[in-house]
Image 1: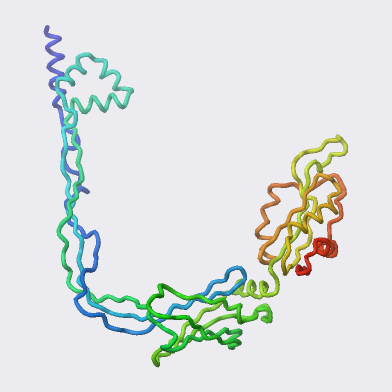
Image 2 (image 1 turned 180 degrees about the vertical axis):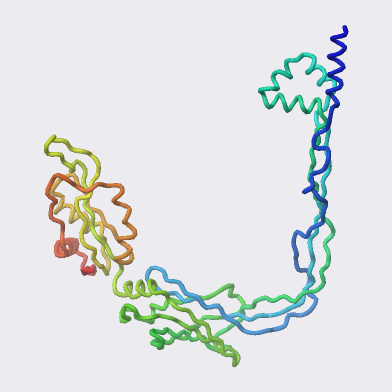
Length: 364
């Protein structure tokens, strides 16, 4: 009886031996903070401030597109409000605190024993025998606070052709080589910039490699002169000049299976290998390069297990860049003499055979 009484007494003692997380951590502080701000109703009529304009460019598929967005800037006073939130912490618990279950766990011994190697049982036993608390964060929206009145700016897009003029200047090495009036503005229905393709009136094929290209737009509006410009990068200039002369560049690739022969062991692998790649050629005009490749394949597939494919890009350098990792998927042929690869005359012969009279190629 004395032993049983002692065990029960120890159990009751353990069942109230302490608390966990009863005090609030130092970082959990009550506060009121500003979540966001917003503008309310206008407190004054809109006033015209000044004219402005955005000018940008984009080179796509060898074409230079200039984008022009003339607009007006207005100012207006509006009420400003702050959205406030109150943040506080509330203690919850004790969680699953149960002195009788704690005593039972201690008396039966097994839960205490299992808790030494099972984390979940240890946590359950702790919650039964200790007063364990948790802190929950509570947020409460407060009434919006007035911050007074603030002056804001906004855009209007009411420019019309009748109000003035927009003139685009194409500049090469600091000198204007072409001017073009930009029209089509009809007023308030416009939502953003208008764009024009400069290639429609500027021939970039006459520009030399290394020339510096830039553009500017002059907007004369109700007697106000406003100019904005841009510079075209070196690589973009090279692309413009090249694409004004050609539609792109390509080379042919001959790959083959069952061609990597080990003549000593009479062994063939089915791994695909690269037999040859042609030089890179410029092309211009209409016609399928894939059909030209199939013609070359018929004439040059001497190994009877090969295929001729096209590697094409916007410019010669891009052919190298776009296909530089393709060799990782192949191995070069070994153990046999490489068959002759086609030259420009062979390719032109296939172009004539296919009837592509508009397709022209030149060597790079």
